[in-house]
Length: 406
Image (cartoon, rainbow, N blue to C red; front, side):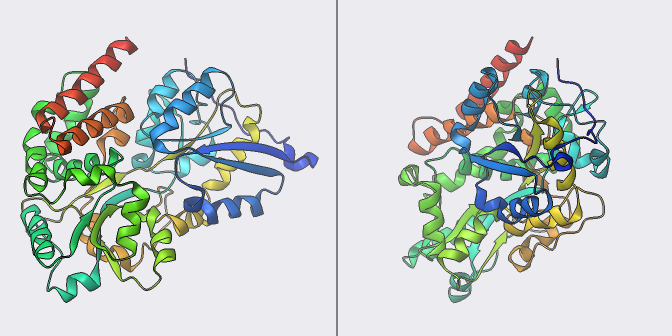
C-alpha cells in the first residue's frame, strides 16, 4: 500500500534553530540544478541539501537497493519509475498538500496513481536535434521539414568531409528517443492513437504491431549509414564534446547540455529543431513532456523538512531558478518561462503541443520497457537484430513486469 499523506507541521527545524540534512538523490547532474539548489540554500537556511548524483544507467538499481534496505534518500528524483515505487509503498502521497493544487493536471498526470499524487513535477523536459548554425549556413542547408530531408543533410555534409551527426550510442537512450520521435510524428499525431498507451499498460497493446511502421521509417537513417556501429563506442560526454567543438554539425540532446556546450565553446552559434516526420506541412515533434519530479521517501526521518523543500519549489522564483540551468516550461499555473533563441525553430512544435514521451507520461513500466527497447536498438545498430525484434523485446519486458504485479 502507498504511504498516506502528511500535512506540513508548524513545528520544524526552521523554528527551533536546528539544521537538518536532507539527502537528495537525482539522475540529473548537480550542474543542471545549480541555481535552484542555491535558491533553496538561501531560502531554507535550516535545511542542508546533500545532493547525490547517480547516472541513469544505474539509478534504479542503486535506489531500489537503498529503499529495500530502509536507507533511501529523503527526496528522490523520479520519472518513469514513479508508479511502481508508489504502488510498492515507498513514496509519500502528496495529494492533500496545498502546493500540489498549484500544478496543472498535465504536469501531475505522470505522477498520479489512483487518487494519490506521489511526486511534484519539475520543469518539462524535451529533446530535439541541436544543430550548428554556422555549418548549416556555410553549406546552404536549411532546417529539415521531413525525415528524408534530415537524412539528405547527412549525405550533403558527409560528401564535404563534415561529420553530420554525432551520437553517444554507448548509452541506449539516444536511439530510443530519436526513434520515438518518429513514432510521435507518425503514430501519436493521430489523437485516436493516444488511447494505445492505456491498452499497453493492460498488456493488450503491442509495440511490435502499433509502432513498427514508424520505427521502420526511422531505421532508414541506419540503412543510409547516417548512424553506424562506430557510434556504439561513443559516450554521452564524447558526443557532447564533438558537437561543442564543432566537429559534428548535429547532436540529439536537450537543454540540460547547453551550459556545458557553452562552457566548452562560448562562441558556438547553435539552435535546436524538432524531429521531423514525413509531412513537410506539419511541425515536427520533440520527445518529452512532464520531466522528472521530486518524490519524498515515505520512510524518511525528515518528512516535514522534505515537504518544506517541495513547498518552496512550487514558487515562481524556484521555478525560474530550475529553468535557469535546464530550460523547460513550468507546470505551475501562471508561471511563464522564456526558453530563449536557441529553441526558436521549435516554436511551432511547442504551439502545436507536439511534445510527448509515453514512458514518462502514462506507462506503468516505462523505464524498464524503454531500456529493453533501447538496448535492443544497440543490437540493431550492430547488425544483430532488426527493429521488429527490438519492439518485441520491449513488449516481452512489459508483459513480464505486468505478470509480476498481479
